[in-house]
Each structure stands twice: as C-alpha cells, then as structure tokens.
Image 1 (spheres, rainbow over the protein chains, first blue to last red):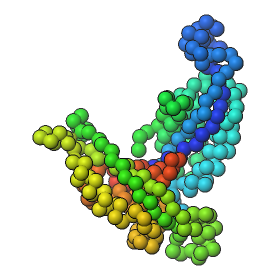
Image 2 (image 1 turned 60 degrees about the vertical axis):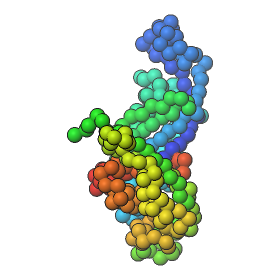
Image 3 (image 1 turned 180 degrees about the horizontal axis):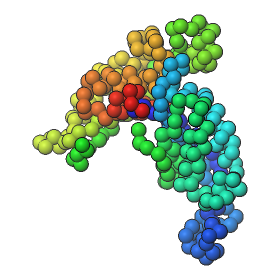
Image 4 (image 1 turned 90 degrees about the horizontal axis):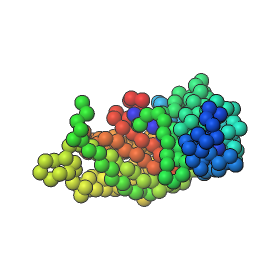
Length: 138
Length: 142
C-alpha cells in the first residue's frame, strides 16, 4: 500500500458540554473542559490519502489540490471559530474524537467524483500530548 | 499469519537532493503549467524512516544488526541520492516526476531487493508537513 500524509493546523475554541447531562454531570464528565466560557487549542490535523498514482501528475492527489480542498472544507470552516456553533456539532459534543470523525466524513465525501484518492486516516493532535486517530494504518 | 514474537524497528537516515517535476511528453512551458513551481529545480531535506520486521535471532536478540542496516542504507540510498540531482544523477525519474510518492516507491523497491522479507515498509518525509508511507507490495495494492 502507498499513502501520502499532509499536516495542517487550525486554532479553534470548544466547550465540552452536552444537553443530555445536567450541569453537575457535565462538570463531572468533562471537568475543566466544560467551562461555559470555552477554551481552545491549536489543532494539528494529519490527513492521509491512499489510491493509485495519477499518471499525469505522479501523485495520489497533487498536494496543491489537497491543500485547496482542506482549506476550503476544513480550515476555513473550523479555524478561528467556536466549534459548538458549527452545524456538525449540534447533535454531538465537539470532542477531538468527533472532530476527527467529522473531518474524515467531509473529506471522504468531497473526494468522491473529484479524485481517485480516498481518505485512509485522519489524525488530530489536540495538544502536544494527545492525538486522536480514525481510519486504517498504512 | 502474524507471529507475536515479531518486532518492528525503525531506522532513520537523511539525504538532501535537488529535483524538478517534469513529464517527458510535455514541453518546458507545459511542464510549468502542469506542476507550477515544482517544475523548477529545487531541493529538499528528506528524512527516510525504514521499518524492518522480524523475529529476533535467539542468540543475538536482534532482528537485524543496526550496523548492517546502516551499511545497506548508506550503499542503497545515501550513495545514490544524497547531494545528487534526482533527475540528472539517477535513472528512475525519466518517465515519472520525482513526487514523494514516486521517490518512496523507488526507495521501497531498492530496499525490498536488498533486505527481502525483512523490509516492512518505508516512510519518506519530504518536510515536517508532508510524507509518504509504502508497505507490502507498494502501489500494486491499495
């Protein structure tokens, strides 16, 4: 198998609270991440694609095209925002797990019809000390 | 199929090369349109991570002697690529542009030849934000 991985960054705020839980339960489950005023991270996003090499470019997907897609669909949407306000996170809490899954879903959908590349894996670094990954290893 | 005594180890080496993306069927102007700035000669500090997998030898406790692995990597990769131009000084990028995908596939092929079944895969980092991984039979399975 061959895969290509590109790393991006975006700063965003979030609040880990769910309407399913009482205020006390939210505090207990999410701790200081439940602060109603919010907090934020410089997220590091690694997008891994696999697929055949395009004969006319020698790439799974030319880096400039991947950058444009990720900028338009992810970075411009989530960067410098409060993630709780995004339609993706009206039913779900914007934990790093759910952000990683939403990014994979969005990029997988947008690649269909646009390219022979497909998303193999998304890894989201929330801080230098935690990373969250969905999809397959190369 | 998977034996739980198998261990994977990773050894990294660095090499610096110049390159330009071009396809032989295209004119200079067409290559510039196709590949943008990458059609001009430029360079990268590549980092290659070579992943070897096997059952440690019962006597030495090693999958492979790292001195031997280092020698293989010096001979197969560094001698051919470091401080060279990938287009002019090697023969692998006449038909295909030296995208990280193609460079990683060439390296994977050379190391598969040299290391055989010990080779698990390679990870070629072009810079901190872009890398390619090749495992198994490379581009033939994806």
